[in-house]
Length: 114
Length: 112
Image (cartoon, rainbow over all chains, first blue to last red; front, side, top):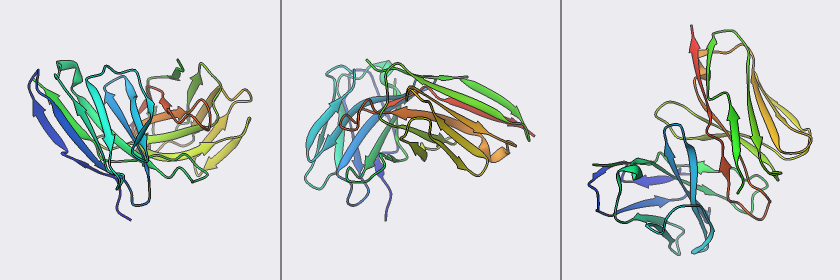
């Protein structure tokens, strides 16, 4: 099986712009979560989508949004970018019917805001 | 909200030595997971512990889940250069709420 695929891998934006990141989960996985990773802060939970519905949401401002499509692919959008949004954005998928809650992470999208 | 803390933040180890990293949650966890992230890579699942007091071993790695299901530890024996990376613990507050909270991680470097 192919792993979790995230695009783009790297991108540079300027303050005030908006960005859309894409995530294709492992085939058969219907749950997709997004995390923001910054140095020293670990992984901060953004949101989880399952069956096209947002199931959980982290403590991020409304500028961060996401959606999931019927094929389980997910996108996240960040509007009005700020310098502090520079981070590695990780997408993870999991099989909710599995006994383990193992998350399968993609390689991430590294966003730099100038 | 739920907070997961890990100590130490950095661990510099001489090759061949043992070390332990600790994970503490402010709330009871339904399970605890450990992930490893190599430099420049993405987190990779290592193990999940579910039962109170559970201990699991993977070769030189020993994982333990506390009796109160609020803390966990990872012990690595005879550290090798392949152990370099950041180790994260993570846990959901309940089996129905999968808002997985990660600790800030323990970054391990190894002196040959």
